Each structure stands twice: as structure tokens, then as C-alpha cells.
Image 1 (cartoon, rainbow, N blue to C red):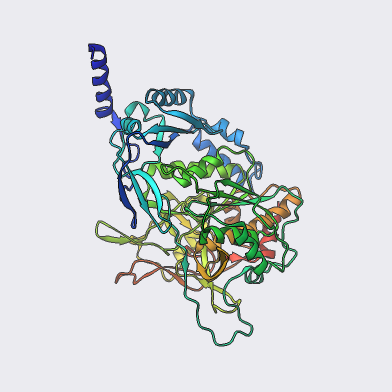
Image 2 (cartoon, one colour):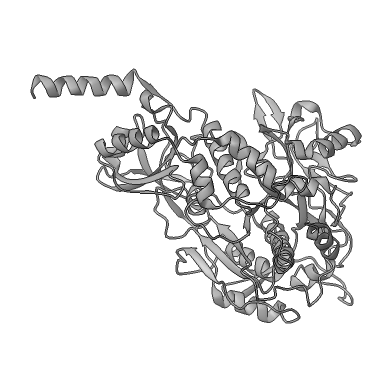
Length: 563
């Protein structure tokens, strides 16, 4: 080895050791429960890693979201195109050049960008990746009910300090694929069934939320809706057909999914995938439906991140997206959370309505320095999405008023401050609720969620040709609310109005008009002497358990049809 190459080697060591930084020092790197290591990845194995490049004009993007989403603004409904968003947030030429040069020198290949140029996905061998991302050590892992495989590093990674102004984080190292939180209750025993229902079906939903047989898509517009799935599972067209045969006889509906983005794996269908598709397509009946499906992804990719990349790379998208996915806020790095929040902001600027499930752990619970606190969920806590909580029937066998489903996720973000659109509603709740938990349990100044709710308890689902009863979770309420918003978009499009877009500013300005207020019940939280398992309680108006309430379709249509 000559003196020149020796000096270069010393310089590389100096750069990696002395002049490096950790982009995600606060990212949780523990192995999730139920996952095990299968050992080190082969050095020659190929990995797909995603580099999040630093964006420009994020503050301006935030101002534009406010302007296009606020009915009082002259820019209301004048949404940005994907190209407009790209023009705004595209990384600087210096960032693009610096990162590409660094990756090229490391041997990265088959690098693909997106229209907004703020993500770069490249292939590297494990050996190259571990040299590039100092400290990383890739292992094979398996876990979850579906025996999902993933390649991850539980060790922190570092980047050269020269990249600090240019790279937000690297995806594909730490965050594990999600697992389902859906529950299936044992079937209750009921004496006699006259006038009763034995679980939630499309006809029960349509009766409770006051939809008629005419409340379906016209089939004459470019209206469409989508659900996104990040579990290692998929739906079957034959299950959808059987579901509609059993439960869809009294309303017009579409027989199949219009488009699958991603790959539909073979084998058994998953209950959650079946639930999402069946209830989005029966609530948003006769509306073209897309499914974003993660099966077939590479083991080193993060499914949720891949979905965000798809949104940044497709100019014509469905107007409503329902997503049953969440992580504990505290398990994610602040860099990652803030960047994902910007991605959700990009969608809002384009007039997309993103609905996220609020979670199935009530207020949540964790221990910080020996003290219990509630545990908010993200992206449910993002100020740029509409978050959907859950309810149950007061009488589980009759179409009655709704009460809180005790699992309904809700609370206050520890990351995002309270957005201006919900200032009045949240202040009123905090000053008037007779059952507030101790103030040390939650951040009263944080973004509060959910925003709305729907039934989340006791659904019938067809999966693998079998009707399955008593499936529960906010994974059920979210596609139902999304489908009803798609029906409202249909009316707006037929009248020449823009789609609803980011709903929250309008929702809070209208003080929940068009929604059934849910005022009874509390959700679960920490099982200790201080709170005894009780989180927040619902009450008149907005609350952090069911938001503004559940949809009364004719009234909600009227509220949201005004330009």
C-alpha cells in the first residue's frame, strides 16, 4: 500500500470517527416483543436503504396547507399539484450533489428518486452499508403473527458530519414492520334474536349513520378512495365478493378493487386486510377503490416509509386514504417524526384526506423515570391528519346510541404543539371535564386527538371464505369514516366543488356539526392506584376519546357541502 492510499485510509477513519454525527440518537432500538434474531446478515447480501434528503421551504408548505384547508381563506380548495409541491420542497442542488457523490463513492447502485427528489432509495451490500453507516450491524429477524422477516440493525448508525445539513435520516435500519392490534371477542350469548343484530355489518352501519340505498357513488366521476396496509397480509377478491353477497345486497357496490399498488402475495388472506377493503368499499359504496399493499417488499424496507414514497411519486391519487397503522411516539426518533409529519403536510397541500386509526390502547401507558404517563401514538398525533377513534353500541345487540369503546386511542402529543384549529375545542374540554386525569400524565398543550370516531366493536369480516364475527379495533372505524367522506366528495365533485382535502380546520370551525356527540364512557390507561386503569372520559362537544363524535351522514353531507 503506497503512502497516498495510506493517507486516504487514515482520512476516512478520521471522518468516520471524529467528524460524524448520529441522525437518530433517540430512536428506540429494542427488539419488539415476539421478534427473534436469526443471526448476522451475509456481508454480500443486498439491502435496499432509503435516504431522506433535507427539504426546503417547509415553513412555506405549512402556510399553504393552512390556506388551502381553511374555508375562510381565499385560497381554500386551490390545492397544489405534485409538481407544485416538488418545486417548493425539492432539496438544494448542493444537497443533491453531496449525497449522490457520497453514495456513488460507497458503491451504491440502482438508486431511485421520487418526483419531489427528497428521497433516494439505493441498493448496497451489507458490507458496503455497514462501512457507509458507521456502527450499523445488520441481522435477520423474524416475528409477529405472520412470521414476518426483516433485516435491521439494533445498533445506532453515524454519518459523516459534512452530511448533517443534507440527510434527515436513513430508512431501513431500526423500525420494525408493524403488527395488527385487531381483537376478536368471543360471541356473546343472547336469549332470542327478535329485533336484534348479532354484530356490525354494512346494513347496521348504514342504519346507524342514516344512509339510504341512494347514498352510493354515481359511477360517473373520477372519485376514488384507498386503504393502505403495512402488515404482511393481503385480501382476496373472492372474500370481497362473498362479503358483498352476504352483506351488500341492499346497496349498489363495486365487485372488485380497481387498483392494487404494490404486490398481492399468495396464500391466506389477513383479517385486517380483508376488514379494510370490505368496509371501505361498503361504506364508500360504488366508489373506485385502490389498495396499497406491502407484501413483496424487500426485508430491509420500512413498509410505512415506502407508502410515503409512493405518495411523493404519483401525481393522480385517490382523494381519501385510510390507514390503520401507528407507533408509540416515544419509540420513534424526533428527526423521523418531524420528517414524516412534513410528508403528511405534503399530502394535505395536495388536497388529500388522510385518515389514521387512533390506536387500540386507550390513553396508553408507560413509565418515565419511575413515574407513569399516558403514551400517545403517531401518526395519530400528527396535526396534519384526521384521526378516527372508536365507539360501541350502548346495547351491543341493538342499533342504539353509541358510547366509548374503552380501547379507543386518544390523548395529547408530547411532540407536536396544539394546532390553532383546535385551540377553542381543547381549551373548553380541559376547563370543563369533571374527570381529568392528573396533569403529570399528559401534555395538555400538545396536539389532541382523535378528531372523530365511528363504531369499532363487533364487526363481521369475510376472510379466507369464512365469515368471522366480533372483530374489533379502530382499524374498523377508520375505513368506515373514510368511505362516508368519499360519498361526500362524490357530491362535491358532481357540483363542481373541490374535494374535501385536509378536513380538520373545517371540522373544528363547524364545532362538530353533522356528527353524533358521544358523551358516555372513558377509555383505558395505566393500571395503577392513581388512575386505576381510566384515561380520559367523553363529554359534550369535542373530547380526546371520540373527538367530535360519529357521522350522521345526511347532516354531515349538508355541513360539508357548503363551498
